[in-house]
Image 1: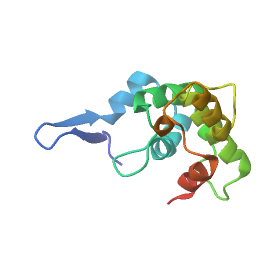
Image 2: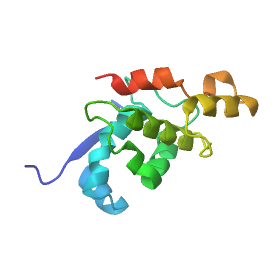
Image 3: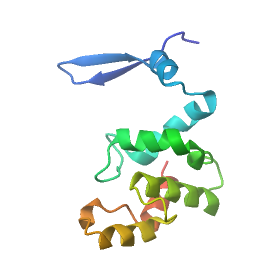
Image 4: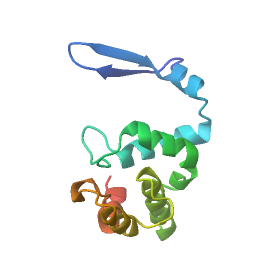
Length: 134
């Protein structure tokens, strides 16, 4: 097993190498949180997957640190209604509408606040499909 894990970031012209172990130590992640980083990354988007319009990884990461338990069952089979509901709550918190627990209700709330349609969270059907993808 390797003692130090590095992540390549930056651009082709200016690559950066980030010591993952050091980052984990600095932010104080425990083992249970580490296991949730991959599902977190999958749900908040990457270079090849969808993302949460109008919200950065930094915003999503802040919500993750405060409410990581909402992603606790993500990636486990079978996918349950509770798991989908928890991911919906997580997305609602990213969009700063914690008073609702459904992304469809969050869409209505945000639309009433005149948020541009392209910045609304995905529908529950789209979110469920996103959760199920391999």
